[in-house]
Image (tube, rainbow, N blue to C red; front, side, top):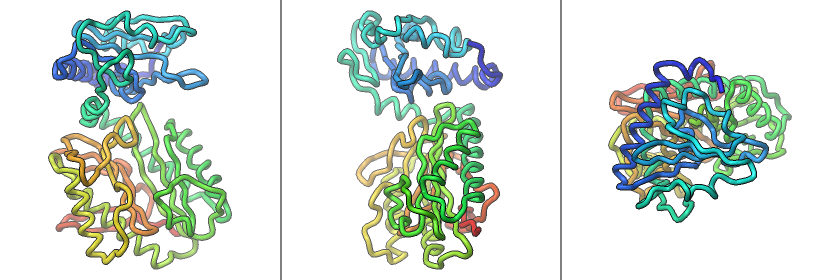
Length: 373
């Protein structure tokens, strides 16, 4: 199948070469004879954003078998023309197709090498490599960073255009529909959309949307996908004026977010970041237990590749992407950030939107404010 010009650029070709090298190194590190990757996140990661879910059922129709000699595509016949031609020769060494009514998974054993075989779908008694491959995905390439920058701007634009156009008396579901429509118009896949209005702001952790109608205050949030990569962001809107208490709560959530971003450096443990945020919450004299859910984690080809937990020894790696979404009562601050040895970049930074200007350890930081309609 002919592909778009982007897939013929030197950046994309370098991306495929890098991924090919990484997966062969991973095979050697795992001391395995073969790897079968069929999870959509892993398929997208290795192929530069392609999907192996097609058809009216969105079923997984292809997998990648990596051995020491080659990378082979195993798929249904009706999937054969869906991949760009550039993948053949640059990533894929061979392919095997089966009739649409014979699941390719049933034929896997015919191609497996002897010895240790690992996989992400646990077919044919394979050893589970899902956590190990997730850790491999989180360190992004230069090409993925460029795609993330494109994704972040489109997501921010969709959120802010929705925030500027919604009207009072619309239901949360109607607002969610408008937001999803804008994401789709920008070429993004709406992975998740959340709208909370007025007294439902006290239940931000629940997310989703209801038939409740907007009276005064609204929080909109979305996770969008582009070329397999995921980003998450949110924005706050108030009509006429801002409830002082809600503004204070969003400012505190924004300060927690700014502090989390400031201290997010390669090598830092996620658990230590959570401890730091808990200490800041105590300084705010917040009496209830905090947090009641994780306020952040590493993102990539899943909305959350690895979630920060107090007891889990996840450490940030150079050139990774994370979501911070701390909640303080009815206030939330949520964006997606890239980090490396040189610092941090807000991939979903506010474009045409009010901002809070905060300072953390002498460094000035911006967080999205509240739009007054």
